[in-house]
Image (cartoon, rainbow, N blue to C red; front, side, top):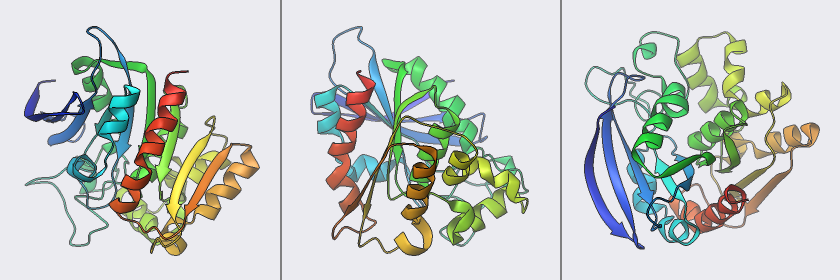
Length: 279
């Protein structure tokens, strides 16, 4: 898997890079960013994945996430993939919440989306192998987090792969996409109308069917404009309580859905993951 370096910049003693490669999973070029903190020669470092939300690319968190100082302090590699395949010849939709920029971290089965929209396989398999090959990553120490649609991705990927991820958190995640408008549109469009196929991409449904992680950290702003209709954190509370999964759900006063919110609590999340990844 040839990887092209698009840019590198020094930051907090480490290197922030942006890279591109031809993806077999999506059949398109995919761009992602990786921050490698300062480290001793030959050291292998824990990895924290960050999955972005609707309309985003790797650039949103790279430019606005304010994670590098904390990653340098704790010695954690930070990987920020794209959210979906993009480009000429890739199916799209006029709406912001479907098509390019809105991959929902699923492997689509419906035409025309199935040709390129394989974000589950891309994140879980292909990009993971590329990171392992190209960076000083200790793939036995991985955590995952994400925002909104990416929070949905982080929760579901961790629940499906509990042996791979030692830690999982989320910022304002969509926790039950099968029950909210964003998710019904996306899952129905990408996977068809058989709701049984949606369950593998629904965190609350996965927990209800027996999937487990050791614990969860979730932050959401109490002024988040999407909380009541799209995010439904109370459903995750109920699912975790019924399953006995320790959940720290923090409703942060006055914060909305934006990167002002994410950047404020990013340091907390990096430190939380680092504690578990170094244990």
